[in-house]
Length: 393
Picture 1 (cartoon, helix red, strand yellow):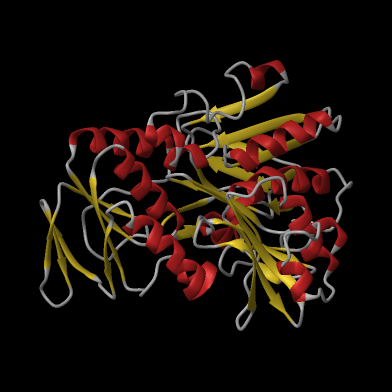
Picture 2: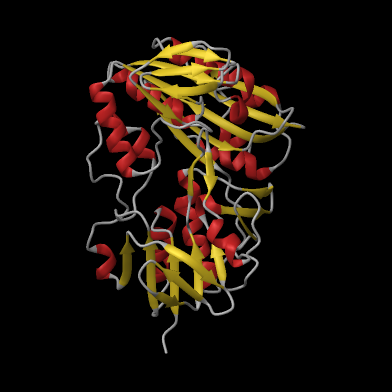
């Protein structure tokens, strides 16, 4: 009897995993289940092109609507998985009980919520459409949070002529992923486009057309977007008895504490050979870890060694980031930061641990090669634009 492989989470990671199973010749039943009513889509356009109105409405979707049936993949949308039994190897959904031989969890993450009611959140296609309508009808948007999503929405709002206030407890945006100096560059970029930052501020209450800050200050606004991070959707796994800690714990092959259950994408906390335990929420991780997990399900997996990668577009700035900034890392700059045409490297003991290119293109592979090489590099040569990066790896 043919085996049944079930993927819970009709996300980018889930769709690419299903695609890989078929591409690798798996002949059995493939079931892809998601509680979102829309077929799998990519999330970057939701805070970028789709929100700006520069992307086609169907551009985020991973595959055409008939792609799944054409490959005998059962795509079940708007269906929630309520329980997972590891002992019985079954899933209870909102419609039926499904038996599996192997299971992949690509359940993603959800926005972290403020401890007060109100505000908009951005995670789904429908969230993006609703927020786009808000920008069309608003004169002022207040954003709670100064991370990637918050700043991308700020840029989109300003480009659509909407005034923006950003509220954050930090003193510079993006301090956690980039540190003080580089985070400050993004603050300067947004202030140059008239974004009003309220640093060191916390929200006490959201009222109709008002944000009340701790201490009593009030920000008048038409709408509020809350963008303060994400929480992994690991509850299904936890109830089933899988090992969970800031996501579903998996080994370097994306295998959970149950040998027939795997996890990938935002929800997976991977035992990475270089970084140790790491959970990555970015697009490239979903794109590549779903296929990696699918190959592991087929017994053809290899250890996960991918370097984390992220990109953003804000105003006239395009940026790509690779690696992971470590505490106490030194900065090496190649180019002109003031003109936002540079590559920034973070080094520890002379080793490149992360790199970010701002409006400098076709260097990501070289940056990742430097990180993967994991050996000291002369900082003077690293900073010298006349020295090809490929010669340093």
